[in-house]
Image 1 (cartoon, rainbow, N blue to C red):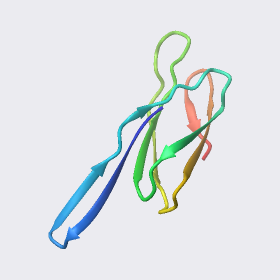
Image 2: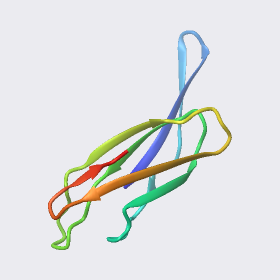
Image 3: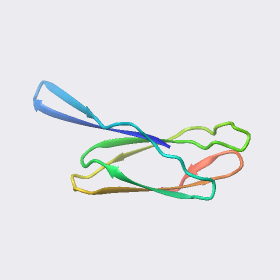
Length: 92
């Protein structure tokens, strides 16, 4: 699973400024079916790209999940997913 965040602000009506949070990669072990992400910044839009690596070394299709965090100070995302022998699904 890899993700990055973006925040767009308008200090001037004609000028938009985009702040980009660092990209991150998370690896989930075979028996793990959920993952907490607790380093998200408030008031950002994050895109999560989730795929599975199978025993034969091939990767499943990438599924994207887009999340907008609230202006709160601490943010945690709980991502739940299920993988069969050929594919993965988000359960969020």
